Length: 116
Image 1 (tube, rainbow, N blue to C red):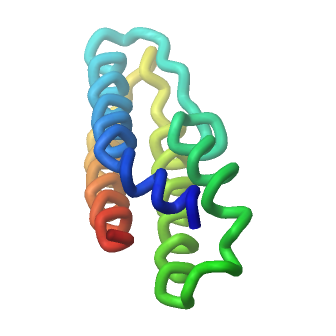
Image 2 (image 1 turned 180 degrees about the vertical axis):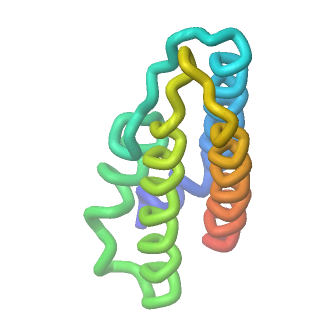
């Protein structure tokens, strides 16, 4: 439970990091610069979530467990979708991918806030 409380305490940090990730991705597309895509297990959120929260899943009440599973699925999907963009070779469909990434990010924020 300590890991979950710590995650909630630092929630604003993780929310802002995802917003920054999207912003950097958009800038890389605009400038056709390389972008280091990360998986859901490589970003800063990973350490807190997969090392301090997820391993103790069975200790949480069912409602919290369901939220955490949904958060994990959405978080990994966020990174997977974003990784489809080749920032050095932008395509028209990248705009739809960015839109989906932003929608998923907003939904992720809502789920994380629901933990409070």
